[in-house]
Image 1: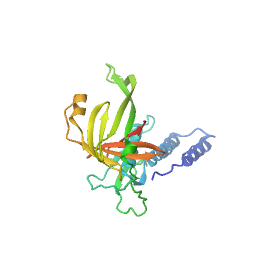
Image 2: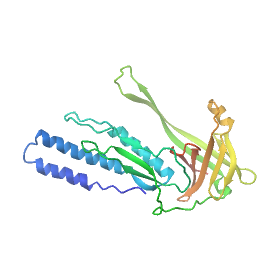
Image 3: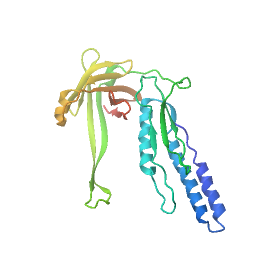
Image 4: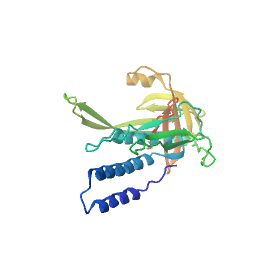
Length: 264
């Protein structure tokens, strides 16, 4: 459950500063205080947008991904005219813990530093989930998940100049499409291929929409990489009338899942 963000306080703050300082030139101390207050509120709004409660693993992963963007922008940001900077933003996590389909997480904001800047976010496993809504998994019959799924990604190539201080420059970008094919076998067995190469086979559970299997050697041969002993989990579902699957490697549940939609 993501919290709503109200931008009114920062707008009123800026208007108030204009009214207060509009008649006379602000002193150095007033300028410093105004800069502090405006950026405290800006940082707070950015952090607040990444908080939530009753979060599933997937929702948690998305908010953590969003928070990484906030860290890139705000961590250690300095203000040339003043002797303060925003702290290095932290992410406190619960560490190893048991997880199942009913586990829910909460993201809250950490305390403030000496300049009043909030210092990051904390992820907690919720012990009391009585206020959370749990939806029963809605699987799909195997006949409905059979077909072609396409995942389109934008891949960019960057190059750094000879000068160490020079920023990385994007020199090329391309759209890449990965085609997944789901085929029904005997019983509830299904085969999944990527670009015509066998990814793996496993038993599909139409009640939960889940299929797990060990990644086939074929896919590693096609990628010219060393085989890995990993299990892939596909979770099929339907959203707004469109069938999709979420793909994640078992054991990497905190990673952001790959979501791919059925096209035919």
